[in-house]
Image 1 (cartoon, rainbow, N blue to C red):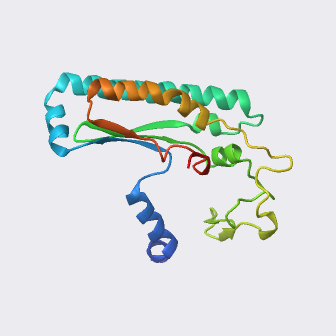
Image 2: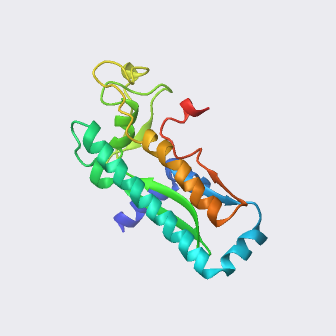
Length: 195
């Protein structure tokens, strides 16, 4: 009974609620393949061979990018604890058609990319998280605005690989359907630099 109560309380906390809401809006580090209309999407799905070829091409693109990301991490990051092995591609489909492409990786990947770490927090006033024991932790206020300084310089291992490979994905999408577009605004780690 104690375990169930704990789980129930965790699901009711505001942090849990906000994380569920965030999941509904879309996951971070994803590329959306958007169609202009539902009718066009329906008509495209009728050609099964072309649909299968498109899905295979998108999957092949994501696997190739994952291979490049892993080799980039192994080449640039001195202490690659678990990052290179944790990089995984995710292709999400809707009614059989690839709709989103995402990449999942260990949390240390964002820290390495931004130059953050212990004693060198972010630019926006820190963050809060729950550790494995259920304790709420937060960024030390003394480390605010020190990210990317000192001995922790940013290592851009993610964004350049995606930048380099987006034109090929655009060609794959354009070959499949002229009325589809790529929304790559959520894929980059350094979103502030893109605006």
